[in-house]
Length: 176
Image (cartoon, rainbow, N blue to C red; front, side, top):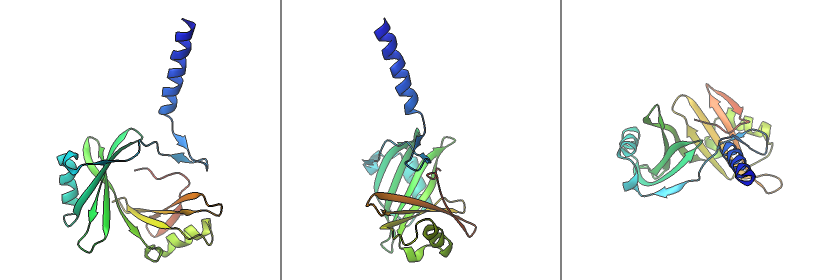
């Protein structure tokens, strides 16, 4: 009986941890995600595909991924635009309705607003990212995600929020 009680308490503790926010190394909040899995386009709900087509009618859809983030379902649907550039839409349910919460594209540093570049350099002077993702939230907010190696060779991600001409380096990972 004592063993069963101990196992039960350990199980409750572990399940409780599963629902907790996970801090990142810098002390901020990190999203709890299942990890992305490739999904056949035919397996993506018809409502999601219809939303993609309505949001980006020129997008030639070629791929989809599925994951859960903080317990919410997400589909990342991507493809190419007529000019050959790649675009990805992140879609989740809000109040039961599939909604585009981000439109993402890779960009070069020269395409970031000056305020964003200045905010990044104030955080990590002289750092040059290997990849930049522009993530339009659809409400006037754009999150710039900078990826690269830090001085010790460790993978680094820095996010800068841009809204109304103002840029702010984020401490916590951006949530939709």
